[in-house]
Every structure is written in C-alpha cells, then in structure tokens.
Length: 471
Image (cartoon, rainbow, N blue to C red):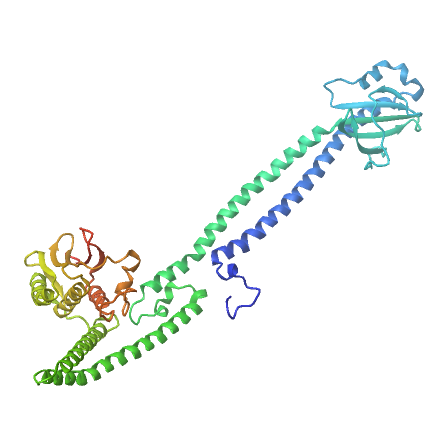
C-alpha cells in the first residue's frame, strides 16, 4: 500500500516513465486516427469502385438497349444478328438476357430477376430512362445486374457483370490508399520516437548535472543548461540540498565539538589510570584497571578517527597542503611503526616490494593518515598467525597495496565498507566504521583510485590505492 495516494492510482501508473506516457499520449490517438482514416478510405474506395463499376455496366447495357430500340418488339426474333450479341461465351464477364412481357427468356443468359430481399437502387441515363440495379447470383457466382423495360414494358433487358471485376478494382483502390497510409504511419512513429528522445535529452543532461554536483554547488547556477519546464524540480532539489547541507553541518559541528570536549576528560582518565598502575593493586583491581585502559584507548582511537574524518571529508574547509612527497620513505616509515603491533598480534608482517624514490605531489600528513588506517584495518581483522604485507610500485600509476589475511569481503560489500560507520554484519572485532571512509576521502582528495579485491593466493583481501602519474 502507498500511503497518501488516491485509490485510483495504481502501482504501474505510479512508476510509469515520462517516455511511456508521451508514447501513450501520442501513438494511441495517432493509431486511432489512422484506423478511422483507413475505414473512411475503405468505404470511399468501395463506393467509388461500385460507382465506376455501375457506370461501366450501364454503358454496356445502353449500347445493347440502343440496338434493341431500333426494332419493334414483335420483330426482334427476325433479326438474328441482333440476337447473336446475347449468346454467352465462357470467357465473357458480361452477360445479357432478353425477356418478353411474360418474363420468358427470348435470348441470352437466364439472369435472375430482383427479389424483394435484394437491395435495389434506380438510376437514370442521359435519356432519362430509369434503370434498376441490384446484386444476384448467376451459376452461384455473384454478379451485378442492371434491368430496364422497353417497348411499353413488352420487353425486359437484363445485363449482368461478374462481381470479381468490382472486387479487383476495390483491391487496387485499397492498395493505392492504404499502402501510403501505412508508410506514413511508420514515418510518423519514427518521428515521434526521435522527437520524444530529443525532448527528453534535457532530462538526461539534468541527471548528469545532479550527479556532478560537489560541495556547495547548486543547479540554479547552471540554469542555462536546464530547460524552463524543469526549473520547479531544480528549485526543489536545490532547496533539499540546502537543508541537507545545513543538517550535515550541524551534525559535523556537533561531532567535532563533542570530540574536542571529550579529549580533555579522556586525557585525565588515561593519565590517572597510568598513575594507578604504579600503585599496589590486588589482582581484581588490576583486571578492572586493564578494562578501563582498554576502553579509554578505544574511545581515544574513536575520537581521533572522528576528527580525522571531519578533517578529510569532501565538505571540509581544510584544503590539503600539497608538496612533493617521497612516497617510498613514507610507506617504509609507516611499515616500521606498525611492525611491533603486528608482532604483538602474532602476525607475519613484511614489506614485499618498495620501489625506491617514488615522488608524488600530495599532503604528507593525510597520506600517512591513510596508510595508518589501511594498516590498522589489516592488522585488526587478520586472523592470528596470518600474513600482512605492504607494497609500493610504479606501473601505469603509483600504487600502494596493503594485503591482509582476513575473511574475504564479498562483492556486495566491497563498496559499502567505504561508507562511514558501516560495518559488515557479523563482524566481532572492535571498530568504529570510520577507518576505510577516511581512506576513501583522502584518496579522493588526491585523485587516486581505491579498490578492494581478494588476494592473489585467494586468502584475504588486497586494498589498492593508485595515484595518477603527473605528466
């Protein structure tokens, strides 16, 4: 159920795209218009074919009638050359029949008379003679029939034509009318598709602009690239970004203030715990003091990471202090500083490859902070007796690799572990979920690529940070 939506709004309509709505609004009426036009064209073709067909049949009948009117009705049998035109031929499509006043066939083909059920119509020729027109069956074939009485109704002439000729004419007219309409329909559908794609291209550009927003940038500053119809949406997005920015600022200020305020009492706790350690304590007191020192150390590390995260976040006003850094020396110093902790955790810690004198334009303090968080993460999550190594080499880029022997991070988690405060479900090790977020922010500040993958030997993970080589 979607709260707040009227009952008439279905889930399908709710998620319908603008493209599908435009297609529905344009194509459905167009198809209906084409169908109506095709029906009208069909009717007009049918009437035109019937009219042309009747006129041609009437000309044949009038020619026959003119010859018959030149003789008296009682003398028609005396003119065999006149009666020969009534003889039927297998190849004929026009049939003639001559009847007397008693409706007896005098000559020609026996053509059925009109019945009360036939749709009859009348027409007049140029001599104002009235003809009866109707449809019938001759040898079970549909025919079109014209009938007229002459010599004071003493003689009746009927002329019939095979209906297939009319059908062929209708098909010809239909093909001449419908084929161009189908071609036009295809062309219009293609034009609609192109027009919709072109009309929606500003929405794609707007999406790209939204993705490219950084820091305090707003969409309204790019109004020349945004269509007027999207401006209400742009204003709403900018307003939302302003609210989020204010909320994020308040949150960051609160975290920074809280971290700074906690540092003083925490320092006092650590100091007095060290003084207590020199006193004569019983085993129970020693255990309680160790727990206190462990908690204080954990809290100190968390405060340090909180301040580091705020300092290195993309929104931070503290710009990196760039200088030429010997990354080889920096990596070696970090490895030496973390070696004692690795030994204390019974880990095989070492340096695999360190290319000499690799220089980089970077902020040395932030780089060291990044290396410390990578090594801390590797030592913290590696299993006892495992291996941790650090490497530095130059290829297409200058890459720092930190490999651990922790449980392999699944593909679905490899992006999420760099989110702040995120920890993989089921993790039992202590941590704040900020270390890798700090690594990601520092890598972004230096334009470096950060990725994680399984180690080559399949045991553990490899965190790789590659810095672009200045040209």
